[in-house]
Image (tube, rainbow, N blue to C red; front, side):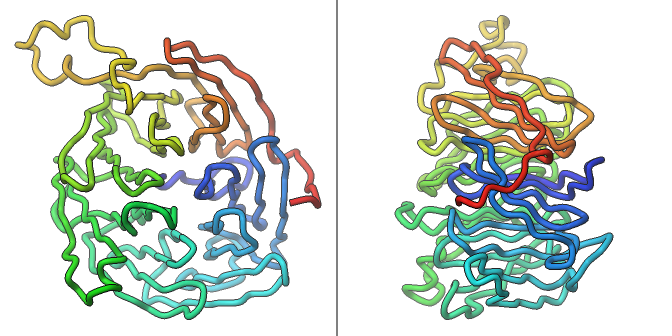
Length: 351
């Protein structure tokens, strides 16, 4: 979903939504916080004495299991270790150690995936927690990898950067389980430059990609290994922080260092805007791209991630501790419905 966000001024190190986009984790220099999105409520708060500084964290849907790794400035554990914490028993239940620092963690109810800078490790989860495979990758400093989260998904899709610059590899983990290595990785040459973001829709049928240029998002059909649509974020280069599909895969949103959250239609692409020069074919691909159906802005100097809420809303959460909720319509209107400082919200005991 997201590339590296950097460090926020409020001591926030990373932000990530859970698989149904109804909660998010806030990794901090002084611990870890978990929030419900609608209504915005802090659900759990772990101090630095329990978890130390947390660099990456993944919730398992809305269960009591969390997987996290430590980072500076006050790590309690090694940065090459992933720990699984049971919030119900208040105990660590699993520990995995790797040959290099952890760059990303992804969970579904039967898999744990950990990205290092040059490897992807896949485990069965939670019991038995056994290593299923180790995949070698090109240099992946952002830890890009995504996993189709739903048990009802069309395939247990794992996506990560391919060996060729700008390419992605797709693996159906279910295929490996059922018949050794009969499911060979599929490579799609998605971009000419290095990848900045990858997203997988909940159903495991589509993948969205963006390069470090940050102007275009391409959406791919997994079954056909073909491009479905090309979406234009803008004409100026940008650093994309996040791409996310809506739960029904009808829309897609993205955030960047330009401070604009873009919302695109996927099911009915006629809703997306076109360039006023679209009939001038001699201008090339620029005018053929589809532009956002709607957009809204957050402070551009602050990195953020975005996701879809209920009732045609998009949520943006930022490293400055701010929470933004906008409602959009199919004719392109976008209006703010909520704004808050989530770091100021106290814990609620009812999860």
